[in-house]
Structures are given as C-alpha cells and as structure tokens.
Length: 448
Ligand SMILES: [Zn+2]
Ligand SMILES: [Zn+2]
Image (tube, rainbow, N blue to C red; front, side):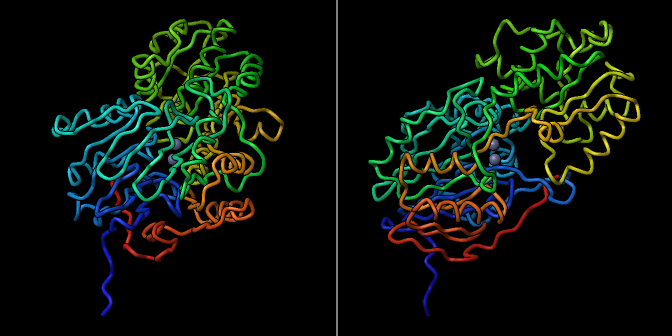
C-alpha cells in the first residue's frame, strides 16, 4: 500500500492553505519544508449569508503537530489576518512575528486573556531577515488600507517564496511607505520560485485608485453639505481618518470620532507616530452642543454592524448626537456583499429621518471617488509580476471567481506554471509543481 507522505522533507517546499483560498476572509496559510511548518496569518471570516456570524479555519492538522510549527508570521493587522489568534494561540503556543502596528493590534485584542504574558510577541523591522527554523523571513513594505502591510519573502536552502499579503500599487498612500518598485525588481535575481498572491480585485480591469485621490472628492462632497456631517468608513483605515480630519480642518469644522474601534485605532496610530500631531479631535461628548454647520463626525459601522455608532445614529439612540433633517451621512466605504441588506435598511432609517445619504458605491457612477480599495486590479498585478518574473503563481485571498480570473491573467502574462485550488489542497512547489486536491479536510468553526 502506498502511504501518504505527511511531512515535507528537505527536498520539498509545500504550500497548504487552511483558510482564505476559495473564500474572502479567514486567511490561514502553512508553508512546509524540512519537517517544519511556518504559519502565515491567522484570521477570522464572516458569514457569506448575512455577515453576522464569525468563523475561523479548522487548524487541527497543525494543532496535532504544533511542535513542528516554527512561528506565526503576520502580513498585516486586518481581522481576516489576525482575528483567529485569540482562539488558536492556546492550542498552538507559537511565537508570533509582526511589524509594530500589527503587534500593537494583537496585544490590544489579547489584553484580557490570562495567557497574554506567555505569548512570545516579536516586533520585526522592514527589509530585515529573521531565521525561523529552516525559513528565513523578510517583511517587505507594500501599501494597503492599514499601516505597515507587508509581503513576506520566505527563503529556504532550496527555493524562495514571495507571499504578497494584501497590497495595492499606490505611489501616495497618505500614510506609510509608497509602493517601491526597486524592492521587488531586486527579487528577480533570487529567483522567486513561487508567488502566492492576493486575488481580491483580479476580476477588475485597470489600476486601483490611490488612497490620496479620495481627498478632493470627499472635500467637495463634505463642503456641499449644510448641516452636520457624519462620515463612516472601515475602522482600520488610518489613512482615511487622516484625510477626513484634514478636510474637517480645512473647512473649519470640528471633528470627533465615534466608536470604540476607531478610538483604539487613533490611539495606536498616535503611539506609533502615524497621527499628524496638528490634527486635533474634539471630545465626542461635546459635539452635540456645537453649531450644526461646524460638526463633523467619523463613525464606525459602514457595514451596518449592529452595535456600531452609525447604526445607533440611524436608529436615533446615539447618546451624544441626534441627527436632524438636513444633516448628512457619507459612506466612504463599499457595501461588502453579505452586508448589503443590512446597509440598505440602515440607509432607509436615515432617509426616514430626512438625513441626506451619500454612498461611495452610488457616487462612483457619477465619477466621484469617495472610497479607494486596498487591493490591486489587473494592470497592477501585471506590472508587479513583470518586476520579478516568478516561475510559478498560486492565486489566493479570494473566492473561486477571483482565483480563476487571477489564474487566467497570470497565464496570459506568461507565468510558466499557475496552480489554482482551494483550502485543504496541498500545493507542492519543490521538487516539482503539483497540486494534491483535498489533502487535508477543512472545516469552518463558528466562534461568534
Ligand atoms: Zn485580507
Ligand atoms: Zn487586508
């Protein structure tokens, strides 16, 4: 009988996604070499039906052999990349490596856990290599929609991987480092044996819009409102808050932040030097007493999350502010498909109160840019791949339609080998490219 080989030898490099490949969210990836494993990201996912239940990937495969897991390395601090650490760390007991912003966010999330003191949290620097067992890992800066997003260069003695994480090609991301072509074109000579890459916007033609390009249209839109203005956006997009507070200052409005996750984010950004000191915020409890035309609020809840500040404003029970006819709500975010129904209901509540509603998705049709995605479109992907000429590509971070669009694009770009699959498939990179379907049984575990 032929027995299944369950551990990578020193002649193997394996990639095994347990979450995030064939779906949006819940990213959890394993790389295997020389009897050892490295985990990249450990995130949470949300229900595709109504977006209200949260899930993590079934990590039983690696829990059973946690002693061969060298480290958990984090690409960036979004929930779909760090949100499962709180559930899984006690089972894995693995050292965690991440940039300062992500470490701060992880620390915050784990702050009430009695085991926090046992977690080895290691802060890494960009462009510096860390030897983690038989893997050498280097964090390379890439713009995204949260500070310090990184691609990971993972080198072994027999081959090299570039894991992109979430990224966009942005030459002016407002905060943090711009896209640096030189970093990635230098990888050509390694060479890169496999590129494991973000597929979120692989179905979209053209180039993604720069984070800096939302400023003029948001300014114009906010300036045109006569009453109070509330803007809601994703609570981890620090660059967007900075843009919004700059606009408030320019228009001589006084700006407050509503919602715990936003308050947390601003204080982390301040601690790490990402918040421009001249941008002052007013005490949110005082905002309701100011003249209407001076009031601007940035609020959590662009996805109509049940207890968010925007939802409380929509239902008229926010403790600090009651919106009146003629006030405005601006959604500087997309409607994520599972949340569409809840957002539309929220919008209806605002309209019933005669509050003006402006949504980035609708404004786009009128040529107004009120939101910029944090992911690369087709032209960006092609430019990126041209810089390093990877020998092989594995599309990840997307549903099947995104993965297959990405596969087609990469094949057209002339990448020799493109393997698309899903969670639980084993992708052999060395000694030769091969995909073994359903190699590990994968399930979703509901956590909330
Ligand atoms: Zn992501
Ligand atoms: Zn992300």
